[in-house]
Image (cartoon, rainbow, N blue to C red; front, top):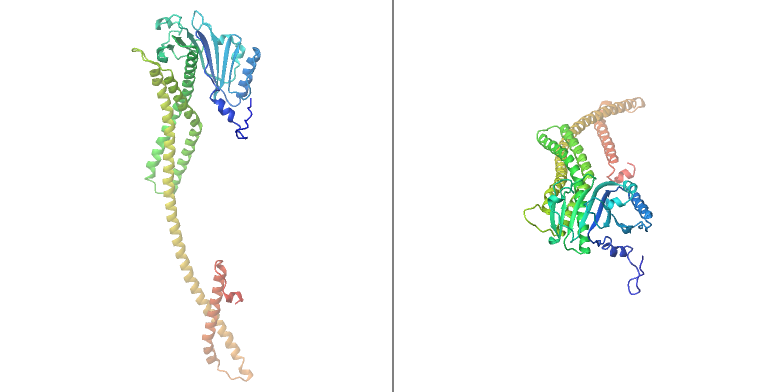
Length: 448
């Protein structure tokens, strides 16, 4: 329900202001009196099944005539007949918790899950991760020892812990039983309903988060051999790099590194979210163990020691593979930079040699051009002098006595100089016209 902004406050409120205030109270601790039977389901959901899960919960509410949750709700708590349902939607999974007060003479003989319609239970969307039956005994109930509990846990080895500074005792094998569910027995010695509800919630979260943390172990174990193989390939490429001389070989090594880098990036994209979630869930498990306030009693194996010994190596495995991927990506990048540097240096050396060769060719062409230019001047001058000699020879019949040999000899320097001057002017004009950055001279502007 939206609240009106009082007149003495700023008129504009942030659209998420009320949601921010309600966030701390979105998932309150339950108040549960003992004895009680609790069934807990954890299912992973994809983007496509979130809506189907919400509709499935609404269908359960409709069967019991209860008001369904709102579309935007991430949690829902309601009593349905003789039991209470607690539904919570998390980032990648959803939890159903069914609470049924009372107990049976035989432990785990009648569970809260057995009260629900079986067709509804079997049709719950998502993939089942955790299924757990938890029974809480009251202070007046008889105390069970390890031998008496053996039959209720199908003879599996039990782990026990004195919780809440000795005011409750937990027994569990943390394994699946014949019904496909885990089993936990809590004996409440002196806790009130508020404390019992908080203890039950922490135990359920402990079971949920430790299974979610272990989801990253399988991909980590599958990926570790491939990372080792890529690491060996990288070491081989670096060893070959010191022996290669040709440019083609270095390009082949660079292509191999590029393919390896693409493969590493694909591995990182496939696992970074899972490995990050594993570390987050592992930290939550360790936090919940601290909140249980376990008391060490005698030589028995404590709950904290059990989870630390079994769960820490799994989290370290995911962290190790993730760090190896990051380290391998950095090493591949450095090796690629080294090879590219060597290739660039060799290309620069080739370009330098090519430029030197082009300079030699240019000088040779210039010499040849100058030689041809001199021959051209001589040839043009020869033809020019010959034409002038013919003109001088045509003057004698006109009555102009001219010594052709002397006149021709005197005209030779003039013709050669004129040809040389015209040739160099044409050459200069062509050079200036081919240089776009050089401004034209005044003579060129006049059309000279």
